[in-house]
Structures are given as structure tokens and as C-alpha cells.
Image (cartoon, rainbow, N blue to C red; front, side, top):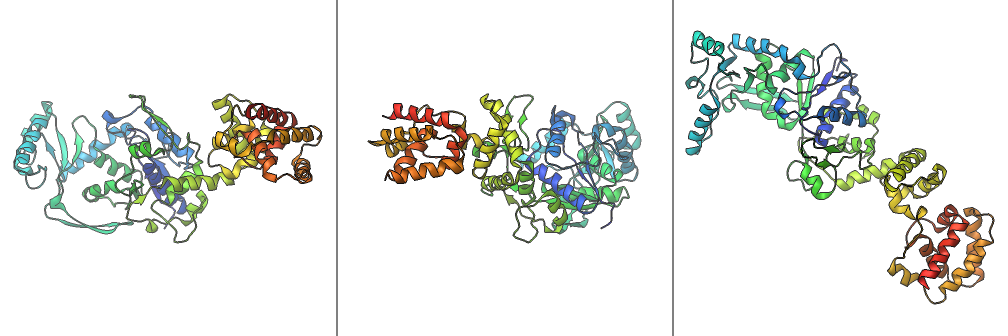
Length: 506
């Protein structure tokens, strides 16, 4: 493999980027960087009727959040721009004309009404209408009209399309890096539209022309484009160009493995299928995103890399640099990969344990301000992060696991209260309060042995003290080491909570 590898991620700005699309971008990025090549973003917006405001910016933001740095893009153009198809509109007509001139394409003047009538006639006989080599010589196109008749129609403003003239009875043998050799008979293919009289190309022509002019060496895309592969190969041949190498990626499947992962699956089971939160500009409907659900981008990239590829080892945790080093398209599977939300959370947990505690403390501090209107000192939050880090998957989990560090109990779990608060408990707590009030050193190293030695000296069962103590401080029988809680809350707060428990649970 030489250093001239050039790959592109070419999404349409018709809505938010699905994680399947993000995985396609990731595999393109990994392949490019593995071979010291270029990773390019091209926005395929030829279908203006489906353009969605904000979608292009969303795509770029999602790639940036994921750490997939672009070498060329609309915002960072190289020498092969423009990088939006709508800005390349002036390029495609000459190639459509070249195909007409060489006999590989033809003008078709059939109206939508005429084609719809033909479809209905076929359907009434239980057949399917396809515009192809079997019937094109009987339809309203330049294969049946004289050059003069065609020109008259065009000059008169008659709407038309340019269709590819699919070869008859040709057997194609196509090579795909992932799929191997694929055989296709052209008789089964229709004469696809390449260009319209409004001056806009369809995806098929624009895609081929852009990949050629941008010197794309490898086209790595989803398997939904496999049915178009034969047409694309024939277009390269008709234009006299060497095609790139192709690799068609498997689908990301629903958790049960039955069908492609969809937005509805995420809504039904409570997990995101988009990298970032998306607000539909028309409906206002908000779809969850991994970023806003406090996933780390490194965790999302790691799980996506393994949805369809492995390096033959048992290793599961890969940094982006390790993925670049080990990635190989030949190791991408043909079969779809089931999406596992629980496994995704497991990856998040592994990565959050690797994150610097200072970073987590800052993130939790911001979360507290934004979500709970609590302005707490960073040093205090650092200690909480250190104590709770192993228990959490996401930044908001610090609150779920440690809300009592910020709010004193207003009531107590009834089941825990029955278990922990017995006859005589209030007296024990009174004596414990006295002991605590006498301590000047409230560090864990001091307070833990003081309380434990006191319990032993009183000949009281350890649980008879520690259970009501925890209940008083937390409001429930949960939380980290009770001596960590005591030390962080401080003497005055601990005594206050013990008194409240006595008055409430007496």
C-alpha cells in the first residue's frame, strides 16, 4: 500500500448522523491513517428537497466530538474542492454529455404520468415495471426518436432525464475487499437516471465523478450501496476511468439481531442511536445523543470499532491510535453486528475509570451547577469523585451514588429504618454524638479507630452502631465506606444529621 491512499466519508445532510454512519466514518478514518492517507468529508446534497437545516453542522460536530480529524472538508478545503456537491453542480453536465456522446446514456422524455400508468398496468398483471433493456426501445426516449425530434423537445422546454444504457446480457465479476468476488448479470438491472433537466445530477453520477476527480482510492461505505455497485463499476468503465477499490460494510443490527438498528429501537429501549442530541427543526422532537448522555467519545469509538471488526485477539479496550495500528479491512465481517446497549455501558465504565479524577471533578461540578443549582467547592467534589469513581458509569451517577454529600436526609427508607433503628438505638446514638463532639481531628485515619474502639469498649454489636449511623447520614443503607462519609461531611453536619434521625425515628 502506498502513501496516496485517499478515502472519503460522504453523508447527505438529511438529518442527524446515525451511529452506523459514524462507524462508516470511523472505518474510513482508521484505514486512511493506517496507510498514511487522507480522510475527506464530502457533503452529498444534490437532493435539495431532502436537505435539513443544521444537519451538515451536526455531522461535522459529531466527527469532531469523536476525534476523527478531517484532512479535507468544506471548512478545510484542499486542492480537490468544492466539498459540497451543490457547489459542484457546474461539473457534472459535461460527463453526462460524454456518456450520451459515447452511446452509454440516452435522453428519456417519459412523463411521471406515463410511467405511473405503465407501472399500474404491470401491477394489474402481477408484474413489476422496470425501465431497462427489455422495454427501453418502446418508450419515449432518444433511442427511438431522431436527433432532430430530441433537440426540438429539449429546445421546447420538455422536461427530461438522462438514463444510463445498461448493457444487455453482460456478466460482471466485481471484487469487494470485504465481500470477495460478486457476480451480477446486467439483465437484472434498470437504466438508472443520471442527470435531470434542472441541471442536477443524481447520486450515482455525482458520486462517481466526484470520487474520480478527488482521486479517491478506496470507497468504504455501507452495504445498502451494494445494489448500486454494478452500475458504478459500469460508469467508471464507460467514462474510461480506473475504479477505486470497494468495501461494503455490514449493518449494525437491533439488539435482538432482527433488522437494522433504528431510532425507534433507541427510544423503545432507552439508549441513543445518534452521537449527539438532535432536535428536529420541523417537529421539535428531541432525540438522545451519546454526548449529552455523558458517554465519553473514546468509549463510543471503541464499541463502534468492534461492531463488525476484530483483530483476532481477546483485547477489547483500544485507544484510537491502537485501532489505527491494528485496523484491517480484511478483518471486517460480512454479517451484521448486533448492538448491545449493556456492553456499550460496560465500555463507558472501563473508560471512565481511566479518566483523570480532576477532569471528572470539573465535569461533576458543572453538572451540579446546571442540574441542581448547587455551587460546591472543587476540592470537596474531588474527594467525592475519588470515593465514588469505581461505582459510576456516567457523571450524573456521582449524584445518584452520593446525593447525601450535598443534601441531608429529609426522611428515611422505611425498610432500612425497621432493620437499623431498634429499642435502645437512640441512646447509642446519643453516646456516639458525645464521642464525635469531643474529636478535634476529623480525618478518617483518626475517627475510624476512635469509633471502632469505642464500640468494642461498650460491648455493643458492630451492626447496632454502624447501621443506624449510616441510616442517619444517608437516609438509607447504601453508600461508600461510612467513615469516608463522616470525614467529608465534617463534625457539625454529622451531629446535625444524627440529631435529626433521633427526632424522626424515635
